[in-house]
Each structure stands twice: as structure tokens, then as C-alpha cells.
Image (cartoon, rainbow, N blue to C red; front, side):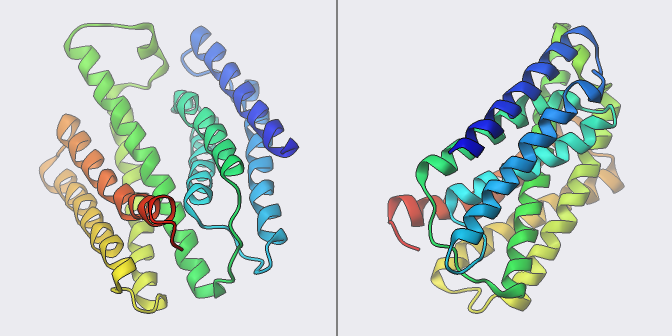
Length: 264
């Protein structure tokens, strides 16, 4: 429990330093918040490693709250990498405390026995978590883009707008993030076909179908951006729709199977 509380404290410290920096400057120096954020992420990862090593199977816990916590850790890492370069540090105000909350939820719910996955299934699982984390960051960027456009249309110039990059830069970052996430999701689906036995069995068929639908929506958005210049609210709607499908594909099904039906 101690490592979880310390990680949470460092996540909240990094968030507080970010908020203070954003209040004073549009792009606060990374030196003011980067160290506590890195310490928090290292402890977060160390906790998952400790759980994995403690389990008989020696594999990572991939159950519902464990997966949520790992995705949040990936989001925190991506946000820190982008924010450290002076772009979108404001995203950390949302992502870092969310990572702390999901780490606490994982610890509070308890740990399931870890199972050995083998390198094939482990590769598929880690690619899935990376794609979820990247595309979740894209969804948050889409929400920020929508809020910024809405405020500008209404000429409602709040102070928080200063913390965001120009609209064009935010939109460019959104599509770059989607492109990376789409590539990871493609690899996830390919490794699923190659490495997962009985991919279309009853427990996995809805997950597979929803993941493919999400992949098609993200792919259509990228093609629409390239060929027809899709942007703004259209891009936001497509991004959030694709992300909703992706969340239902894994976390929706995992929630029902593990927390409602109490099955593995």
C-alpha cells in the first residue's frame, strides 16, 4: 500500500505544479513538474511489476482494473513525453490525477492470480494496451479541440484557453496521435489473428467485432483528413465515436464478464 500512496502523492504533486505553472505561463517549464511525474510513473510501473512477480504464473495482471491502471500509466507516459517538449502540458492536469485514481482503484479492488501468457499473447496484450492508451490520449485531445472551438465561436475567452496551443497545432497533434494509435491498433488486430486461438469464440467475438469497427472508423477518419481535409467538429465526432467502440470492445466486455457475471 505504501508504494501506491507515494505514487499517488507524486501524481498529485505533479498535477499541482502543472496547474500553478499553467496559471502563470502558457507553457510551464518541464523542470517544474517533470521529476515528480516521472517518480510517480516509476512507482506505478514498479507496483505492477511487484504484483506480476508475486503471482505464481509470473505474468502481468490483465484483469479489468489492472488493465485500466496500465492504460492510465501509458497515457501518463505519453502525456509527459509530449508535455516535456513544451506542447500540451495542460493534458497532464487531466491524465496524471486519473492515473492516480485508477492505480488506487486497482489496489483497492485487489489482484487476481497472474497467468503465463507466452510471448505471443503477451505481445498482443501489450500492443492492445499501448493502442488503447494512445487513442485515449487522442480522445482527450479531441475533447480539448471541441472545447476550444466552442469557446472561440461563442467568443467566450476563458483564462484556460491560454493553456492550450493554437487551434491548428492542437488539431495537428490530434491527427498525429490518431495515426500512431491506429498503427498500434492495426498491429493489435494482426497479432490477435496470428496468435490468439479461437478468436471468434463466444467470449471474444463481440470484442473482435467492436475492435474492427473502431479500426474502420479511425481509418476512415484518417483517409477523410488526407483526401477531403476533414477537421474541426467532424474530426471530434469521428474520434469520439471510434474511441467509444474501442472502450466497449475491451473494458465494456471485461466489466460485464468480471464484475457482473464474475467469470474469468
